[in-house]
Image (cartoon, rainbow, N blue to C red; front, side, top):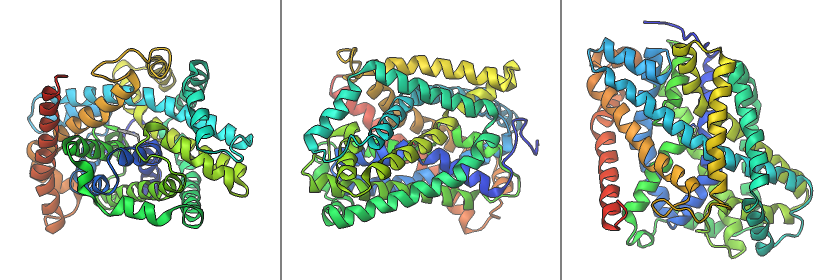
Length: 460
Ligand code: TRP
């Protein structure tokens, strides 16, 4: 078994935690979690989300890191090597390919949204938010989204940023950045929660997020559960090989269970904090929690516009969010770049540029679907929404089930005992129970139910 990856290794144990939480914490926590929770009425969704993180996300994250560290290559080659070693079909490498496709689709729209945060950083700094009200904030957002040239400019800048880091090598580029920026984002988020306590409807937000009202899910429970599960995969960066490849750069003696708990815990904490920062503003200003992907861009400017020093805080907030998105985006491109280097002997630079250009082109399709192509609908969704739905709710969970089945059923027991280093005590047995039964069955039920619902509505 290789003890090192040809692509480099994390220099310290902390570096893995930083990189993996850099991947996990991103737009998924601060942009996607609040508006998705808002679409499904808050507390009941949050409860299902937390269950999904604990019962499905944690064991699958451990499995991904474990497989990555054992394979020490890009997800495609890791799966091929491990399948061969365990005497399984080489078709398992298709799991790696599916992950590449998911990563492409996710990054193409992720980059567009990251572009929004860049635009908003400049707007905040320029004082655009001063004294802004709900209507003006809505108009400002719609103005941006309706302007393909602006969106293209920001999307292009973001993709260049991503390619620059990936081309340098993830370990070299990423470690230093995440060390300072993640704590800074965390502190600023805490400050925003403080603002919500002082100036917003904090009590309303707490009730909304933590007092589950299952009546909210009436008639859309299946869809809500699917979305909560999809959000868990998306937010934890699971199901496509991103965490797997980060695991492949992890040293042999680091504890996988420990690292997983820290990364998943941080990720969940940031999502909850984001909810506690945004919903007090939503309720204090009479905004609709279910106003969709524009939610944070239509609420936070109001708060920054009212608070003293709001231009500075606002700019800082969106810049830090941009960095969080950057460290996530890197992990979406890395599996493919590693594969191009391994199998086609591309240089890292060439591989990154090629992958980046492909995603950039796909991103143009996404950003046009917000304006010029808004009439084009597939399954009732524009391209951006479609890519988001298809990846988070279908491809990532599907990848997750396959990872669970491979790690729980096809990898020999002795291999997983050896790699997880938990001994064969209670912790190991709980993991094995979750990865063999709970996670795959739960995901399969939710997915099959969703397919059934699709058929009923005549879309399938
Ligand atoms: N988890 C990131 C976020 O919440 C997005 C992300 C990065 C991701 N890498 C991923 C999502 C891999 C799914 C799979 O913003």
